[in-house]
Structure formats: structure tokens, C-alpha cells
Image (cartoon, rainbow, N blue to C red; front, side, top):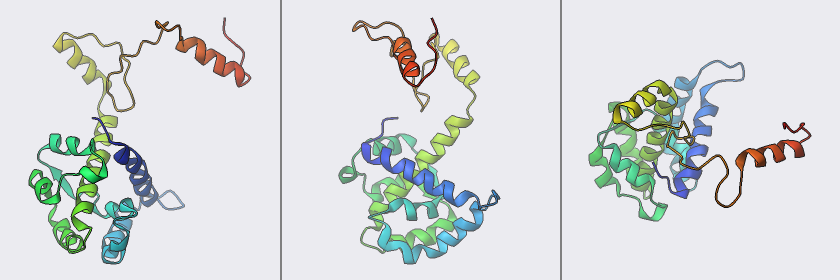
Length: 192
């Protein structure tokens, strides 16, 4: 999945916002309680939808069911000024019943439609990140074997295959040697 710079930046802020709501200072899981509070505060947070959408979007955590993930993934590759309009995007997802009334409040605001698109996209990113983190790598290996493809095990943080050569490349850049140089600069002994 290719993310636009806008969603790359917003995703980490959204994830941090959710993480901040997850536990109290004693480490107790209080996400459900804090989300309830956040949902009650939405009418007062509407002015933040444009400047800090992640602060309001967490109120829609677990609010969406995605009927056509490809439409959402296409949306995630676009910059802010080219997002799919909410009336079109809403055909490809369903809101949980509890979120319907909340969305009506948001959609009355001038920036409400754009915000709903952003909230749906951020929640999709959050869910897809969790599903990737919980998917066993053995299943990925089985799928590669079934398809007849060999897997060198090199993937980026999103589980996407990365075909960069980790040995000597044509331009003479050796990642292993560069790593050893870096560690030596940090005061570690060089392995020979």
C-alpha cells in the first residue's frame, strides 16, 4: 500500500493519539472509557477537524466496516487536496450504528465531509497495521511456496517485499560494511 506524504505523517500522529488514550499512569487499559469521553466531546472539538483531525478522528475508532478496501487504499495514496469526496467514499464502507449519530453531528460542519474521509482512512491504516502485526510470517511463507515464488525474507515495515540487494551493489555500496562503519563510529569493536 502506497501512502501519500499527508497520510504518512498523519498516521503516526493518529496512532500516538490512540496510544495516549489506551492506558492511564498506572498502566491500566482505559481505552473504552476514554473513547466514550472523546465521543461525548465531539461537538466541542469540531473546530479542530481541519487543523488537527487526528484529535477528533480517534472518536471514530472501530466505527467503520470497509466493503471495498481497494477504494480506501487508492485514497491513501492521494494528497489532501485530491481526496475522494465523502458521498462517494461512504458507498464503500459502513458505519457502526453507534457512529451514525456522531457522523451526523460532524457532517453538519463545513469541514465535516473531508474529515469523515480522513477519519475513515486513518482508521483503515490503524486496522491494517494491526492485522499485519498479528499475521504470522509462516502464512506468508506458505503463500509464497504455493505461488511458486521464492522469498528472500526481505520486507519493509509494512510487510511489503523489498528487492534491494543487501550485499555488494553495482555502485560499490555494501550495507554490511556501512553498518560496521556506523557501529565503529559509535564505539563498538569492528568484527573482522
